[in-house]
Image 1 (cartoon, rainbow, N blue to C red):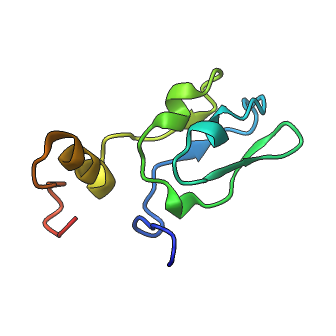
Image 2 (tube, rainbow, N blue to C red; image 1 turned 180 degrees about the vertical axis):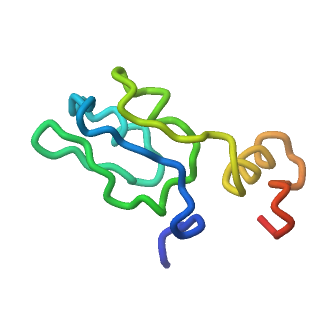
Length: 95
């Protein structure tokens, strides 16, 4: 079975390596293994696996991560699960 993938090359995730302190919280909270921490430095290892949930940015103590959480199909699917409603991302396609 292949890993869950979002849309290729559209993720808003950004990592500022100058600010990162290598605490590893991003790797701990990311549900899709987007990050690795090596030698006290986080790095993005699978950017397109990001579902833009915002967990990494919300848990980064130095704001080294930025992501526009709550946008796109992934957010619509999560909201659908939480509310029991049909997902609607307003993109005109099917989530």
